[in-house]
Image (cartoon, protein in one colour):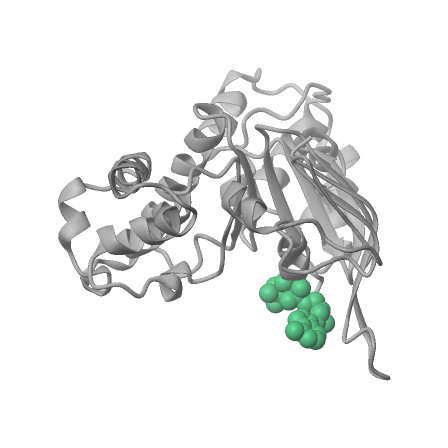
Length: 301
Ligand SMILES: Nc1ncnc2c1ncn2[C@@H]1O[C@H](COP(=O)(O)OP(=O)(O)OP(=O)(O)O)[C@@H](O)[C@H]1O
């Protein structure tokens, strides 16, 4: 497993009179090399959870296992510096993490800090740029003079340059235009499928990650409301509404088609194209009567 949480709770300001429990009794298993989406309404504990993944926060109850490192509530933590190289955390608006005068200097900063030679750091920087689909000519540019999408990718490349086994991203597509968003998600998928990295993405836009994520965790007020595969989520998307989330369009369409035609198979890859293909392949005029489905459709519209 890349990450395993056993009965983890986290409370802010635990030792003062004031205490806010942001996470309650979370059990989570993230297999190595998988892609996982984390969703939940605002304040449900997503960012708090991410910070447990590389030891920025320590559980106030329970056990967090990340790769071969175990962090247990109430016990002295092991050395976390090596873990921070192996688990890259990309914060919301990662461009705020960039501070050097050239993209290259920004990208080699982490690797040099973790003891790589200058030559090795520069090679890692170049590879990270290519992995993020960026032109190597941008290495010489000032990061603050890049476009929004280029800057976001360069900031993610600065984490990738450390060659992390696990990459955790907090809303990586926020503020990007639709084409850049889709492109970024596909780049993240390639880091997962082609390079075997574990990718964990917190998102308020489930639609864009649904075709790619293997599993989902949905939080509600600091507790697990759903954990499982896309199929399980597609079987009962109403759980999302109970968590204050909108059911993604692709899940609505899949459910409407599956209910009408009594499809029991796993949901197809939940892209507009796959759903259109599926609908086109269905026999016209067949399926259950509309009366039978009035109620079901109402659930999702
Ligand atoms: N540093 C902090 N000190 C005290 N309470 C905090 C702190 N950070 C977060 N919280 C509280 O913990 C709870 C969970 O917050 P968190 O930021 O993890 O939620 P979130 O799901 O990431 O929200 P959003 O989607 O708005 O980013 C909230 O009630 C929040 O007010």
